[in-house]
Image (tube, rainbow, N blue to C red):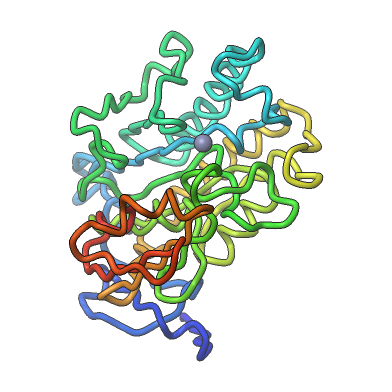
Length: 315
Ligand SMILES: [Zn+2]
């Protein structure tokens, strides 16, 4: 039995549960729909009249960032030219591998991982769990080879959206140029942006890891969702770390539990057309974008556009 809580403030978004075959108006963060699709994927492999059937594939797509990785507690650490960058990449691989291991332990049959921080080149491939497929992003798109063959996506190493108090290295896409991003009137960060992109193929966000603020943000947007908090920000630029073994254990366990959300969690699909308002930090960051077709300039620093394409939510 499922109970939905719909607040007036949240009615601006529509979730289209492909599992139900109907479009229902709900808010962000509404609860469970028991769906047929994911359940079927997990339940196959049982025996029918004593005969074992082939297991349906359970494919998980893991998107990664660096700021929310366990063991990273300062901006200086993630500087590519810095002395501690290699250490950061090793920490990244440990969290990614914990998520991969958890996904397989939970019943995934295929896991793809995407190296996404700063456009990629952070993975140390020798350290990557060999069972996972590394998405080399042949299309040069943010979403790589994500498509509708996947049953869920995870976001490892997430940071909170721009403007989050006590959020470790909070920003949305660019801490240099972006000040504020709103979609249908609601502030979004990269977690929700990624979920909208994944929603293009009907893929729900099932699990994430990051600092406590990023985990809270995920729970504000998605339900059900599994979260693994690996640190707590003290202001924007410092973080209090937890034991690395404990952090990876949390990631592994959350990733394992998240597989069972397939069929319950729904893709994140805002009402269309989506209205996007992006405020830059300075007018000159806005100048180039403001001349593009379909873009309206609201003021010196702010542009607005409408789109029904989840893959066109970034400028
Ligand atoms: Zn990043």
